[in-house]
Image 1 (cartoon, one colour):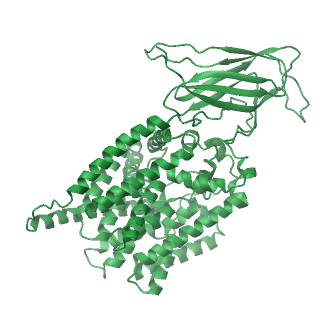
Image 2 (tube, rainbow, N blue to C red; image 1 turned 135 degrees about the vertical axis):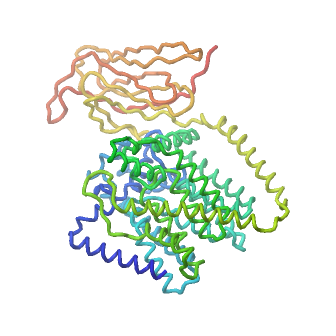
Image 3 (cartoon, rainbow, N blue to C red; image 1 turned 30 degrees about the horizontal axis):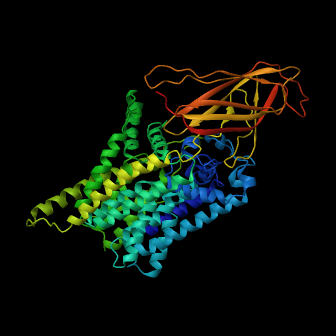
Length: 599
C-alpha cells in the first residue's frame, strides 16, 4: 500500500511541475486530444436524447438503461435550451464552441458537476470498504490515490458513465455473499444496473456461478433483463431499439480508423502488427483481430473458476472485460478493484505475488507521459507500458489457472454433489419463460403506436438546415436552396410502414402562376422478389402557406424521397430573405402503421 501511495504522490508531483513549467500547455497532451470536447461522453449523451431515438438517429453506444439515465438528465434541461439542439450526430459535433454548446449553459454544467461529485463520493466510499482492514488514515490516503488515479482522471475528463459502474461493481463483489439478505439482493441489483450502464460489468456474474449460488444468478439475470428492456419503452424506437443497438455495436467494433489505439486484445495485436508494418511495409496493423479478443475473454472467465483467492479471480474477470473489445484509457480505473483487494488479502509482497502487484499498479498510476501535440488519436509510451502489463497478467492468469487445476486433481476425489437440482430446473424454466415471453411481448408491442418514422428533415447539397420538428411536435423551420432537395425518412420498425409527409410552403416562390412540386420515392420489392412501383405525385403550388401532403410506403431502414419544384425562385431583399431560396415550415413525417399485406 505504501509503495502504491508514494508512487501516486510522486507521479502527481512530477505531473504538476510539468504543467506549471509548460503553463498548462501539456494538459491536453495528457488527456483527450480535443480540448474543446471535455466531458464529451456526458454532454453528447444528453444531446442524443432529443427526439428519443438514440440508436437510429445518433448511433449511440450506450445500453438502454444508460440512455434512460441521460434522458432523465435531459428532462432537467430547460426546454428553451434543448429546443436549439440539433437532430443528428454530425450536427451535434458542430455545436462545440458555439452558443449552443452544453458546456456554456448553467443547467447542463451543474448536472456535470453533480455527476463528478457523485462519482467521487462513490469511489471514496467503496475504496474504504474494499480496504477495511487498513487504518482510518490509510484508507483515506488510498481513497485520495484512487480519485487521482489515471483511469479515474481520464474518465472524469471524458464524463464516462463507467465511473458510476465502479462503485456498483465494488458493492457487488463485497456484498454478494453477505449474511444480510437485503445486502445480498442489493448486490445482485447493483450488478444488473452496472451491466445496464456499460454491459461488460455483467462478466462479474461468473462469481455467482463459481460460488454455486445459482438462485442469485437467476435473479441477477432477471434484473438484467428488466434493466435492458424496460428503458426501451421510454423511447420512440421501442423494443426494436435492441436490434439497432446491436447494429451500432458491431459497426463500431469494425470501423476503427487506427485499430492499434485502445486497450483491447485486438488493439494489442494491431499495435504489434503496426510495428511490423513500419519495418516491412505490410498491412498487419489493419488486420481483423476482434474474434481473438472475444475468445481470450472467454478463456480468462474460465480461468477465474480455478483460482484460489478473490483478488486473483477479480483480476482475471477485469482482464476479460478489457480484452473482448477496444477500450479507452478510462478502463484503467477498473484495475483499482483487484489492486485494493490484493492489499486487503495479501499481507506482504513475495516473489510469487510481486509480478501481478506491479502489473495492476502501473496502469493506474498518473504517469507524467504525454502524447504528440496533434488533433487526432496518437500513440504514447503509456500505451506500450500498459499493454506489456496486460500481457504479463494474461500469462500469469493462465499459470494460476493451471496450478489451480493441478491442485484440484491432486486432491482426493469427492463424490459430486447434487444439492442444487431445484436451482437447475428453475434456471431452465426461467430461460424458457424469458424466451417465449420475450417473443410474445415483441409481437404484441412492436407496433404500439411508437413513431418509428424519424421526424423527417430536408437535406441536400447547398441546404441551410435550421432544424426539424422536435419530439413534442412543435413547429420548426427547414430551408432548402435550389430547385430540389430530398426528405430522408428513417423507418426503424422491422416492417413496411405507410408514412405521411406534411408541411406548409413558405416564402421564396414566384407564384404569379401555379407551379408543380413533384415527389418521387424508390420502388418497393414485392414478396415474390419482383419490383413494385411507388406512385409519383405532382402537387400544384399556388400560394404561400399551402399545405402539402404526400403518402408513401417505406421499407425498414432509410428511404430517400426526392422533391423537385419546376417554378422560378422569387428574389427578395438580401437583408430580409435570402435570394434564390424558399422554405417549408411545420415539416412532419408521421406513421400510419404497418402496410397491410395483400394476396
